[in-house]
Length: 306
DNA sequence: AAGCCGTGGCT
DNA sequence: TAGCCAAGGCT
Image (tube, rainbow, N blue to C red; front, side, top):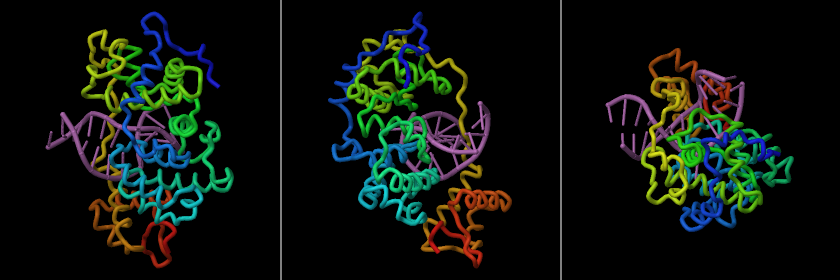
């Protein structure tokens, strides 16, 4: 339990908390009707959506989420599926280890939680692939709990509206959580709606490149706008390289296996990357991660398919 | 705790 | 064009 009185906001140059009802009303009027926000979506649907949405844009998730919900409507349904089928159904969402962890989580939920996704943050945190963001997102969005949800969008909104900075610096989990906690009303219902509203605002209005201040419900009370939209002046953000990394090679190898009916000979994998040493390293790591399995006759395939 | 883990659209 | 970026988690 977080004590709101222990937040680390320094009162001198900080703005008073945003008006929850202003945000909640804006959300009620303008929110996109994403399928995982539907009234019939349970904790399982929300957990699947939140996992897919980790580092992956909404538009790419939409069709895959629909297919998964139709195919595996309960955790036990997914748990019963072979890993290879799960990886194929994950398609090109990226970071396929998420699919394997979700598969493991489904098994735990089915066997230890009566096939029902937990509503308690700490219980959720114990599931594989569920971290501080996802646990709170499920508690708030699926169960209407007051659980501060901190993602990259919320961090940006708070940085601007509250701290008057163009963007949030590097994550500071405790402070970020305390910042958001201080903004939320005390009751579960309004707090959960405000959490959803903060995320939606960051995604659709208070964006990185072209913030829509002219249509922002917080425009009249935004520290950044009031300060004249000063440029970001924090430490430079680390940008990951992708081209030429093991990550790219792993992706190419897995793409071959997703596209084949069954295990393939080594030569078929060798064709996707010229650097043999890097190719071997990538394949080894996939085997270690359990994303690829080797058959007794030496071929390679998705796990659980032979 | 800094670095790794996919993928593709956008500017 | 080539970097930037997208509802993070794990080690």
